[in-house]
Structures are given as structure tokens and as C-alpha cells.
Length: 91
Image (cartoon, rainbow, N blue to C red; front, side, top):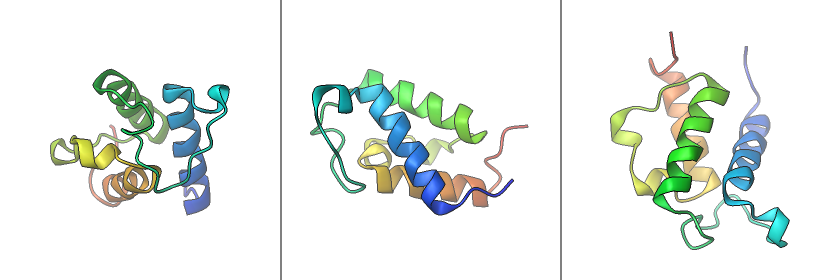
């Protein structure tokens, strides 16, 4: 199944909001906003990574498991695109 890029971005945005609980506190965030400055922690990042892998049925490669990958919705979306283009799909 092919998911449009807009759908991927919106899904990532929803997953980020769920992990960081931003909208419940009245925050709106854009695709390039720094999630770490908005309250991302190592624990919330781990939860986000697991949610992304489950939602998109991918396994992010080890080299993608770094702070910069989870800096923004845009960087997360790029990592998903790369994993889907490679052999990152879960068996």
C-alpha cells in the first residue's frame, strides 16, 4: 500500500503530538520546529520511535537512531522515506 507524502507527514505529526502532548497544552508545531526544544526527552523519543516503526511497519536502521533524526517532523519523515525505500520493512 502506498501512502501519500501528505499522509505520512500528518501521521508523523499525530504521533509526535501524542508522545509530546503538545496540542493539549495549546502548542502548535510546524514540520521544521525543533522537537527537542518543545520538550522531547530520550524517553519520549524512544516511545515515538516505537510508534513510528509499528505504524509504518518499518524498522529504522541503526544509523538513523540518533537525536538529529528526531529533531523535527520533516527529519522523521525523511527517515521513514529512507527506510521504506530500503529494506527497512518488517517481515
